Amino acid sequence: MGNGGSGYETTVWEFDTEQVEQIWRDTREVFGNKLWMEGMLYGVFYEKWQQEAEERSGTEFSDVLVSMVEGLSPGDPSEVFAVFRRGFARYGITMAFAPHPHHGDVLERARRIEAGES
Image (tube, rainbow, N blue to C red; front, side, top):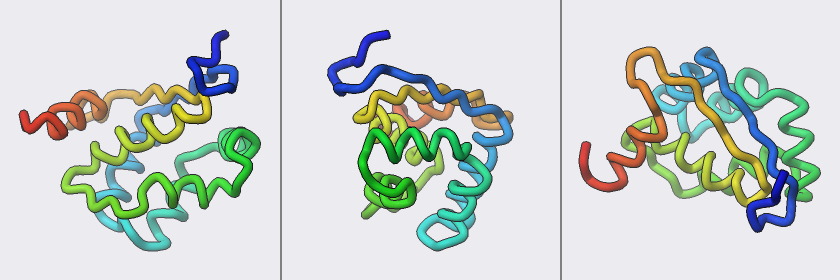
């Protein structure tokens, strides 16, 4: 596999529907407080993913997440998925999200919002 210019071998993290739903729900309901972070650490990102991100970033996984969402005030939960995709790409990590059962392709939804098409 290539490294896509990141300096790391590319890897893919595949998020299932349950993980996508939890990111969506937690972002909508508790974004910006410790419950959101706990949800990401213990309910969304597998331990092996966290370790991989720590090795690639040289910092604690929670710090990686905080740096990605710092200053973010998502009007729509799909924005967090786009931030994750861009942020983890720096470390050679590609994110593949299952469609949300009600909102569909979360990255496409975020793209439309960012483009002012929503």
